[in-house]
Length: 264
Length: 130
Image 1: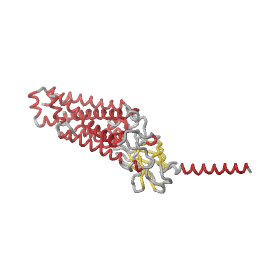
Image 2 (image 1 turned 180 degrees about the vertical axis):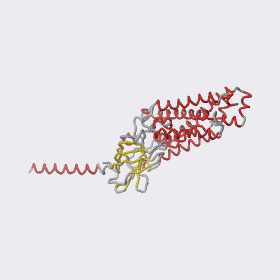
Image 3 (image 1 turned 90 degrees about the vertical axis):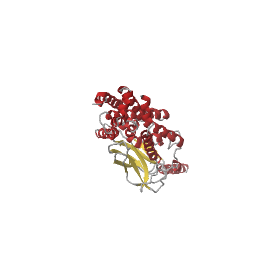
Image 4 (image 1 turned 60 degrees about the vertical axis):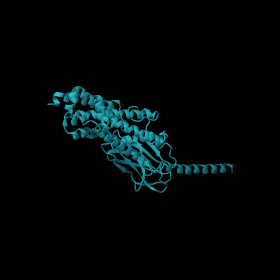
């Protein structure tokens, strides 16, 4: 059952679309990073003024960070609604238990959500490593002049940037899993696939706006994906928030998506 | 006679130091106090003429909330003359650029796409390296 759900999640046009949108949004961020004069034309500029590490961080903290919840839910989060709407669930339940079905869907959705964010980031990091030099200019000349970088593991950035970027990719995986799970939980409450696909993104935007107005921006959802984008983020603000959303979503899914409730 | 020569040498040396110092520390600081629009919006400082070809400077005093901002040097027609740089509270930056002496430039300040409120910022900037 798990294998079947994984195949449905990963071998699909929606998953491919998520990867393409993720990549395009990162390219947009990279274009912003590369805008301006070529460093070779700037007198006195360090050969590392533009570098693989800053380019990655810049690309991630742009359009990608804004639309990440939308990318994460695309591959599989509406499948529970579609299975019910088109009667596919009845065929599955003739061969397997509802409990197995729900756990399989939960796992496949969680993995596809995480991987749909992680793969574009890995690809763009490979690209920046090929296209830009690997090294930093001195801190006074740097385009990201922070040491340490704000947020969890920020001290790694200038001393072990590969590890820091690995951490950011891992964090993106967790972020994608959490928002995909949130969408799956919402899909147990509503029957419209478009509501399911758009709700996590809308909640993300509304929460970001309200928290910013209340001057509680360190709890702003985008800071759980790019914790270096704000000064005072911490392990608690990042993983406390993601853990909270995951916990609430899982509980809602367990309670609301019981077989007797789904079948009314 | 010896004392007079010595005094002349001393005076000329002092003058040379002053002139060289002035040349090295070209330009002056200008205060900026702006509100940068949210969601990737941007705003510029007033235009100033660049005194010498070379680095531009920024000494950020305060950026509202926990945010940081992006800055770059531009000509009056908004052509970029430097890469984007991140600045935060208290960042002091001297950045290389392609603007030359005599060109009129301004500094652009831009928020991130994930900044959901307007951001107040103030500090000093210079088109040169004072």
